Image (cartoon, rainbow, N blue to C red):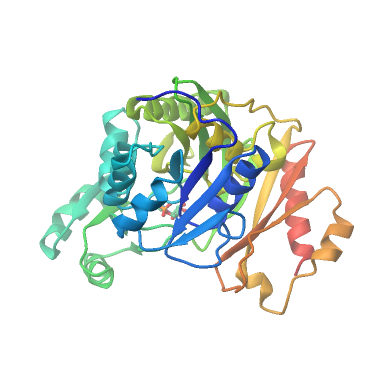
Amino acid sequence: MNTDPILPGATVGILGSGQLGRMLALQARDMGYGVRVFSPEKDTPCGQIADTEIVADYRDTDAVRAFARTVSVATYEFENVPSETVSAIESVGVPVRPGAEVLYVAQNRLREKNFFRSLGIATPPFARIASAADVGPAIRVTGLPAVLKTAGAGYDGKGQRTVRTDREVQAAFAELGGVECILEGFIDFAWEGSVVAARGISGDFAHYGLVRNDHANHILDVTTAPAPESSPELVRDALDATRAITDTLGFVGLLGVEFFVTSQGTLIANEMAPRPHNSGHWTMNGAVTSQFEQQLRAVCGLPLGATQMPFPGSAIANLLGDLWDDGVPDFAGMLADFPDAKLYLYGKSEARPGRKMGHINVAAGSPHAALERVLAARDRLR
Ligand code: AMP
């Protein structure tokens, strides 16, 4: 593997054109890199920032190769990048970071959970369902209630159903299209947390600690950093698990790992994402180096940045399209009343319910103070 740093002035290629790509592109611009984005959509959050927005299908390998020839490194903002896209980029001698083996594991919930287990990381009990005949044996492994999820391509609760009876599992499996699924035992967790971490090209590791995530309708609502309820042992376990994942995969880039925390204070891994994570947006104002700068540094083979928090606590609240139901939210009023709040909007023209339109960050004297303040700032928009 070529470990030479890709220096400012070079061009970074991004697969996927949503808000995660946009915030990476803004950071790349800050540091003097060119940016090219590749996705099937036009006038996208990332395309508005990139030097060039290439609109083509991920499986159009001629278009992918043409894109790859104009960049020094490629990364992605979503994990369902087809493997032929990665191969096409690599075929012209351009590295894709994180690499193909990482995507192979992260793209399938069954492979992902088997991988966690191979490292001794606890997961919910789970079983594969590929046909109606698998339902009975799967329930014997997981018990009920359980959560049925498509094994591939799912996020923000899409492609999953909570199920309480044998019949509900059968119905949900049919509703999800009869595709390969994973049935997971329902975890009655005390709270949910995540670790965002980066591993550099020489194996250096940096992390943002363990944060607490609260969801609404299966979509992240708020994150509080550091997680107020965490103990030093819990943080150590979460970081050890994350480090084991990155080291075993020879990971280069940024990774988010989601955990359930039980009332006994133990960790159960839910999933991982080899890209910036919504629960890491607070780092844009709450850490010396944001997760997007860290991702850029890692994929370009630069040294990782410091992750200290200048303020003791930070929080992020998502702004979903629902906030636009009665017209444009009162941004000016919110900014007037909350001069410490940092507003981010992703440049999406259409506000649909459940669509992530932006977020607010607040850094404060404690995690609780940051959380209260960010919730009050968001309420002010209604
Ligand atoms: P996921 O798409 O796997 O991240 O799931 C989205 C959300 O659904 C999680 O953040 C949890 O709040 C909930 N969830 C997913 N899997 C389970 C489970 N096995 N037990 C309880 N809740 C779950």
